[in-house]
Length: 484
Ligand SMILES: NC(=O)c1ccc[n+]([C@@H]2O[C@H](COP(=O)([O-])OP(=O)(O)OC[C@H]3O[C@@H](n4cnc5c(N)ncnc54)[C@H](OP(=O)(O)O)[C@@H]3O)[C@@H](O)[C@H]2O)c1
Image (cartoon, rainbow, N blue to C red; front, side, top):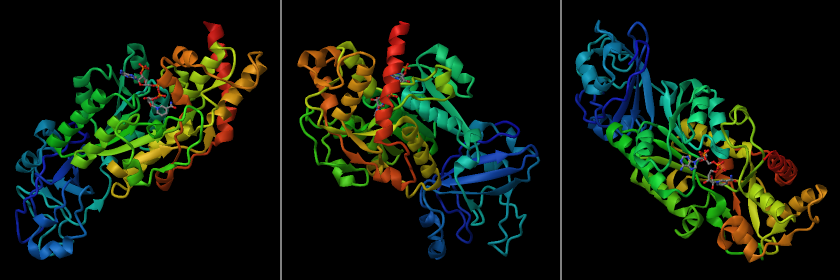
């Protein structure tokens, strides 16, 4: 801990140590964070990870029952009257027990305990007084954040927003990146890069263990990587009592059917309808990973949130993209454009009748931040676990809508006619790697981002913007192809 730095989380406790007062040992039920200024004055933040009311003396329970709630933080000033500065305490020794044995604390105790004097010496035990102001622990010190996918389309846009967040000064952001060159560039943005891959499971677990917040924006389907992240989170929980926040990127692909472009479904999923989401088969796309993540929340060692975007569109912009760290382009629409260019004619799967949702890249990335802010501001009311699914959509399209627009733009460039034709099976395999993968562009995936909107997300771009985004996307691809 630096002279004006911040302490580590303390060990946890829950035993009432003085039945006649509010003193109780916090070694099992709390996280303790200590901030000291240059004079050695300290501020304590006590973050309850268990309800402590049962630990309080019987006669005080009723009175206290609305206080000291699980998951809440209480903070207050705490003056250490030992002449030994708190900043001299080694971080690893800064557990509650070590701390109080070496230090003697006083604080504004008198207001609620009239018989005691303000400066009574509370040797051995810290008092959690009701004067403590409820606050988020992140306001007190740097919040360790770990992000995957920083060099990607979604992850880059999310990281941009974290770097522009009003509380960025309180974030300590670590990003896993594969490219050493991009890692160096990221450092100039104040991000701590770690060169590595999702396949390095021990490294991944260790990085997750260091973080109070994990943003997973790299891969919706990498189960071993997700298990490694959860292993790290679990270890952090076991050793510190912290319940980390895990925000994972899935996709509305979880809702897909086998329409092959031949029909539109009437089935529409709402992210507020927990039973409907739970009715999805475990074999659905992304579902094995999503279910593993929800299980972690059920077990209580993480609070999990899953963002499920539909087709994300638009060329991403911002400093990380300008610095060529992050990928500007999405997946689905560019893949369809590339296949259409290769066959010199706009195309679709089947009759293009199936329906998907879409969302603009900036709107999608904003959702992660709206969600993050909501978790910090309203941890108890922001849905998590089985209630923690957040669709990202702002309108729907048929696949024909997209293929028709691609065809029109290509025709303007002298490539094919303005009416899409159907991919043959051979073409699906040739351009998308397999028939199944090719048919993905003929599935239905219909949803409403009701929960996302309920926490204040306000996407601005609509289907018309999505269709308008196709022309610049085609032109960017043509430009790149002519550069090669
Ligand atoms: N784009 C969409 O419309 C959309 C919609 C819903 C869901 N999703 C899903 O969201 C995820 C991210 O999508 P995206 O569009 O952002 O893709 P992207 O632009 O290709 O980005 C993927 C990111 O993950 C990183 N990554 C991939 N494999 C990795 C590995 N083994 N080790 C370390 N890093 C790895 C990439 O690093 P490198 O730069 O080193 O490759 C990149 O930073 C995907 O699983 C995608 O299916 C995307």
